Length: 242
Image (cartoon, rainbow, N blue to C red; front, side, top):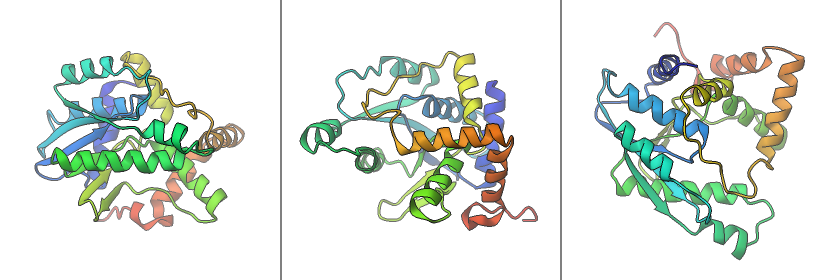
């Protein structure tokens, strides 16, 4: 996928859900993976011509794994003219050594988001952009349905009142395959996660399940996403007449 196509899908999501307001200072949460780096490319290029001016910074929460090398991401941020902040934590030690969590992902996510939100306030950002794409939207709904017995997924825009921060998700119209294509085409410097639980989670199981369902029933993922947007979840509904 070309950068222009990425920008088009990103801008449509931003416009449809009014994700950006005048003079927002937006932080992109950078994990080092393909999704967050694609979002960084998209927003850093979009700010050059988007009619509403906004500031952009990038933030990585360093969980404390010894083998995490962020040099290439630092170089990329310099190239894109985006300030880059690295937040040092001991999350990996707490989860894998101190607590020895058998199911570490939930606690890790909470601690990581907490560290990220605190960093946002310190550098005076009012919004944070997460790189969830269309597959994430549908997978999260399936996880909620199968494991919690309810129809739910994250919203395009979420206001965190306790932190006075707004979460936006500008990649929700992009398929994961589109992200992979973009990363390969532009040789994006993806950093592999050093987490030992990476690839062995409930989400990975749901990802494979959705892939198999979509292979047997082509287009089912798109139909599920359409159902989410058409009113199954009110926060996603767009009134075309407005």
